[in-house]
Image 1 (tube, one colour):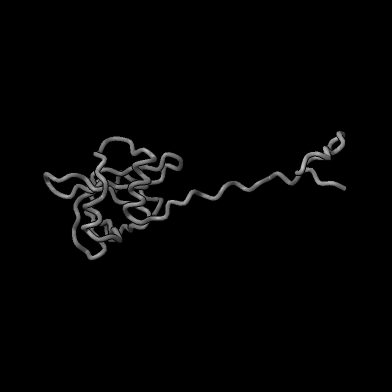
Image 2: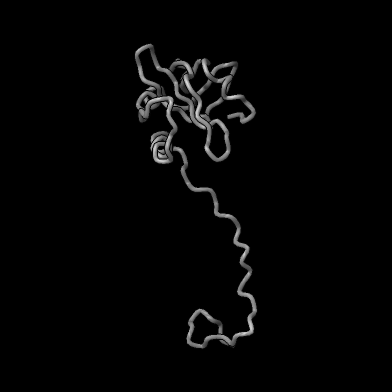
Length: 133
């Protein structure tokens, strides 16, 4: 999804599934805690229905509507955590699994340990991790 979109501008927009079937109206937008980027949207699926959480990453804003690349049935069966509250990491993980999205952790930072520093102590010959000359 475009990251330059103000999440407040998403609220009230119509949302459609991959087949062009209307799902409902965007009720709330949830931001990533670390980056502040819009990550999830809660879609009001009807007057007396609950909100369904959808991922914004594979979705697209097209002609003022949110196009979600999943079937309506899958969206309506998404876990219900209620709206107006913070999504916990565990809840987000459940949503990622529900939509079959990749939840691999980001790669670890590069290792800047370029080896052991030379020291004035002689090597410990009983230590199997210490190279022997």
